[in-house]
Image (cartoon, rainbow, N blue to C red; front, side):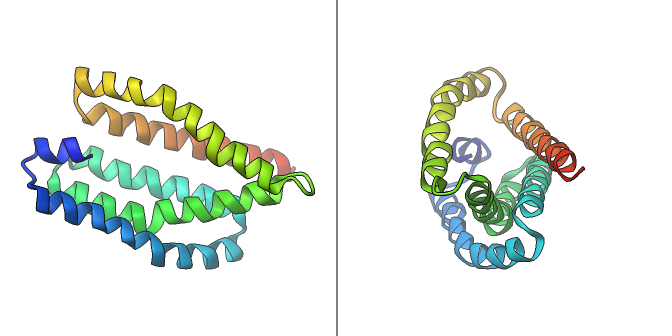
Length: 159
């Protein structure tokens, strides 16, 4: 996003302001905790995927500097905060008795590191060949796919 913002003419000050918007995660997580308790971890996680896909869709539909800043604020305050709290609750709830810490370490540290090792060079290649726009499309599509898979798996689990 920083490269994209520079391409759009943002100065270092505006990029800094956009990065500071990550602080919205703190009140967002307090809100997310209440929402996860009310909805349950699975429904809250699905909602987080939907919110993230919609914020990514905002950038896809209206690419621009101020859209990126709005994306960063909305994503930090709502989508990412809800995702973080709900995914931890889901992992903890779904882990075998006494294995919560192991499941969380495997999922949140090991799996993420492996995915980042593969995704970073691929994202760089996509960015070099097509710019930032395709990355937002891919992220939006992947997020909708995650929402669909989670929705289908929970529907299957309930029946």
